[in-house]
Length: 168
Image (cartoon, rainbow, N blue to C red; front, side, top):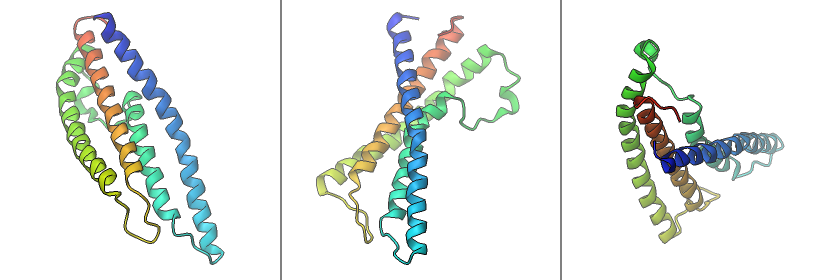
């Protein structure tokens, strides 16, 4: 494999690893917000922002950790036949099926970019009492989708290298 492709794979995987490790700490922020909301409700002074903030934090956790989850092999896989195949067969099947995932993520990104542009142009706010702006979480969502697409292309490069008899 050409050197720039190997560098690309290493760079994408290193960035996604770091982002994923940082995103894991977001779970503690989510727990803190939910705990604060529960304490405030029990004290008779419910906070209007805790439920929506928890939803935003969970969405950020999910999208920023998505590429890391793919990288670590934590994604769900139908293992009925896959486990019995050789590494080259797995690489061939993965190289073909990764295009489906890239297409799906691409459609999500396309919709996300359009939605983000709308949110920025019209200062879109969420309905409800708190009415937070939607653009920040939509930007996080788009960034997470881009990182997942980059991780998928890194997988494709790895699979092609494996098919050629070389490991990256």
